Image (tube, rainbow, N blue to C red; front, side, top):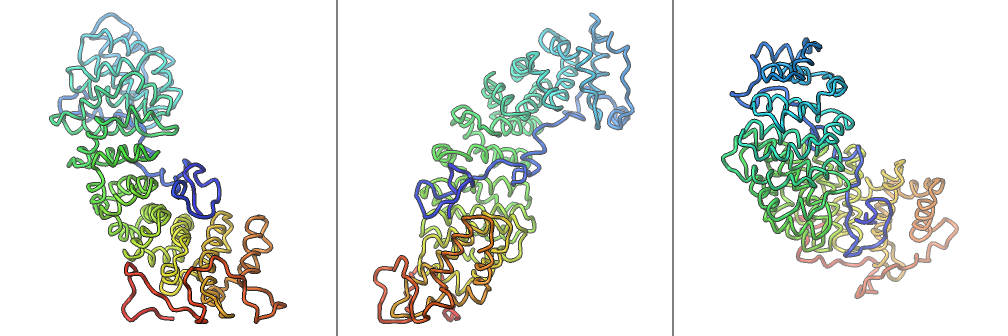
Length: 537
């Protein structure tokens, strides 16, 4: 059973197709997209200094602001609306401090007081650098609020104003504009697209291409770029996935600053999550070798988006998948299957499920890298969502019905017991995954049966209480599960009333199998890693 790109886990597919043999992750809050960098930090509120030269007040004043002790004073509204620049600065600074309170900043109050258009006016017409900076800071924190609060800023023309400030000579004002636009783009796909329509990318890429920019600027710019690449529906790839964008991202994943590195990887993960044409563009940027090396990074915050990039690429065609395998993916994935973080184990299993759905040779490479035993272990010991990904990987591996591969999985890896145990799951899709894997295994065993001999895989399944589990599924409410389990029992296990001398029907008999041996001998290919001492039966 394969999960197709088109249906995104919404259907069950039998067999293997070169065009529809890999699975894409659906968008929902329970998936791995709950990673902190990918979800929680779509927006940021500016609480402190951009640099030592910032106009932020003294440390004592910062503590008071962050603690929420600062209260709105209506006198400052008149100051903001006055015509005196010094008064405007004093009033704007007061509201900026209110909006920088750590918890429950009064964003709605500031909006209701009509201050958003006033702050925008200061940005457009103001000549006082500190006033412009304080205004930009206040608006940045408004953009960090709810979607309705962000929409107010956008409806009043905030996006083109901030895009224009990306080219300002004042570095702090320029950085504040980057931050504000990152908050807007991180709000929703609609806001992201509005930012792109206002030509945000050229000046943003200019900033990212400047190797002399200070670290905080590059961090904010990389984060903003990742927000411009993320979201469903996806942004126009021709815009965000341009050669210039990919070239810059390919350079940023070598950056020594970890925050820049992480956001560049997330941006690449979003860009690689799409068509084969998108994947080709990402591959052509030359990032794969570096990304594979980052799977050994000491921080899971780097490993997670790095693995996501590679996992997305292997949902492409066989050639694209092979590029990643040849770049050394499988060795670090072995380590990630044993990682302490569940999310990494789950992502690693998902990645392997798309490789085993590729072609038989790629499945063999997974076997040669000794990746099936840890997958089988996850099938037995992991949390449910990790088990499900491991089940996909192993089920896809059985789909090729390779004699050598199936025998290795059954006799050496002990796949039958954990598969049969999963037949008691309440998850319909998981049960169907397992049933199809068992069917593939039994079909291979049946293709060897000649002259009344016994299918060699009946015993391992029976010892794993598989027959009992299949019989229990005869009471299952799902019609597909009922019919599939019934078919397996009737085809391979028969009934007590049947003549035991009558062999079950032969399915998909392998060409060239000898008809003289009751239990066939096996010719293992040169690519299969056979343990020393041979197989134990």
